[in-house]
Image 1 (cartoon, helix red, strand yellow):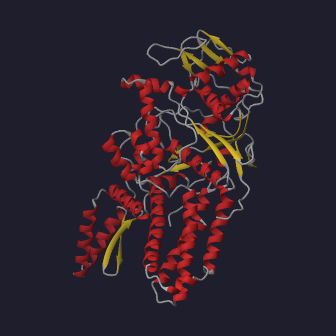
Image 2 (cartoon, rainbow, N blue to C red):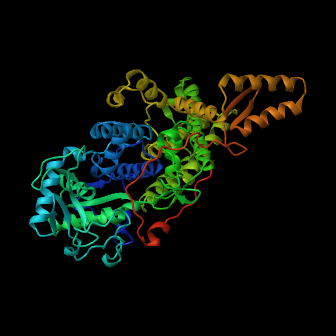
Image 3 (cartoon, one colour):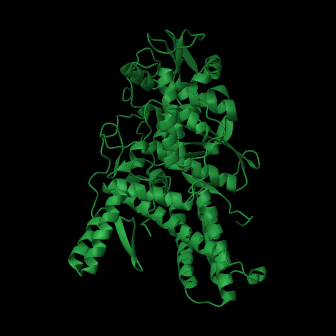
Amino acid sequence: MAEEKSELRIYNSMTNEKEIFKPKEPGKVSMYVCGVTAYDYSHLGHARAAVSFDVFFRYLKYLGYEVTYVRNFTDVDDKIIKRANETGEDPLNLSNRFCDEYDLDMTYLQCESPSRVPRVSTHIGEIKDMITQIINNGHAYEVDGDVFYAVEKFPNYGMLSGQRLEHNRAGERVAVDSRKRHPADFALWKAAKPGEPSWDSPWGPGRPGWHIECSAMSACYLTHKFDIHGGGIDLIFPHHENEIAQSWAVDNESNVSYWLHNGHVTNNNEKMSKSLGNFFTIRQIIERYHPLALRHFLISAHYRSPLNYSVAQLESSSDAVYYIFQTLQDCKDTLSSLQQEGTDEKKNVPQVEEAAKECIKKLRIEFQTKMSDDLQTPVILTGALQEALKYINNSLKKLKKKMQKRAQLQLIQSLIEVEKEIGEVLDLLGFLSSKSYAKIQSQIEVEKDIAKVLGLLGSFPTNSYAEVLQELKDKALTRAGLAEDEVLSLIEERTQARLNKDFPKSDKIRTILTAKGIALMDVGSETIWRPCIPSEPLVAEVTQKAPIVEEKQSTPPVDKKVEQEGNVQHAAST
């Protein structure tokens, strides 16, 4: 792509405005994103945060920045302990297992590994040191082995969320503790209870509170002054608000330049939540849809907008991904066959045609301007990228016709350049360089060790376009409840019906398969099939209810501008 890059503007939740991005140190970016509490399989809300910041991570590197990206695991927490008690498992073993499961989900979704992935259990020393500093600076107090942050000591409490201290809803998340000096004071250290993991400290055995962990780990790797802090919009209050207070209590010049927050995932326009039982895990979704279809779905709305989950949206994304990869595979096949002819005329290959130059230019400019305008991924998916794919398909049709040799060579060169530009865009969005979903699954079944398999990923071959297409077809068969042999048998039955001029029967077979998401295409004397959007709604969205998975979250009165700005309607498939 072109060397000149557009000026990056990102939406800062602290100011509720888009701002020009200027890192604290030229050429380098420091970014911390709050990770998951590892006690169960991760759900679509976790997936959206991970993919949103993965796209941002990739784009920052594309812009030429050296990025230090830190994303934590919470592996010491009340919910982990509760789940471990229910299963009879050691809490740290349980959380370690679900950290591995999360890493596997990230591999499926093609999220690049952050620069650092710290865990609470391995940073207890840094957490205790920070609590000690906060106490020594007069902003926390100890009661019976618990340590509480004194929110009234921080004059700017509420600066991120707009949540005024006097409006804090005491007792809404946890019972009011009469030992607190103010109902909004929160725990930095929790005294040990029987059967819980604990560590020695100046205040007695115990473990960290939730909020302190991210302040300590971000400071450990990025100092108290860094560029970007990210997470879900539900973390604005109290988690990120409390992080600001804690960091200020240690260093009153602490500063995060930009606060970024992704929007909720909703189900039928209601936020996915435990109480409604209306959410699904990543693993449940990718049992029926290719991970790339899920990734496409997750970036098909602007990252700050609410994203409504539905089978129709996933079907649309699956169809869009199939179209992209089928177009690229068709291009590869055609170019491969033509390039094998190897005529001497190729020594003087003409320049690409003007239409191709315009196509490349438009895709390049749109990608850079829209991504630099607060990461407008929906526009990328539905705009010039689609025009470039259409150019390839139209050009492939031309190549099937008789052409002068020089014109043919010009069109071949044009296709090579357009395909290359499309590939760069798709790679930056995280759709290329994939490891085979099926191969990873089969290797896990053999090894029975997720961590070991993840360590072997470097030796796995990269998926070809054809392999992705086959995996998409396999998922379509799963959703249709059919084996490929059954589809081929129906195709043969339809072919015989056509030979017998039994067109009502032939049409009925096509209609039945289309209703299930299987499209039949007559190519010459042959009939082939490909996935399509079902003509009738699929009833079985996910055959099982998701296991109960809570998130540490609250619902403050967030400025509506944060959720509403940048709404982009989901892309229809091409």
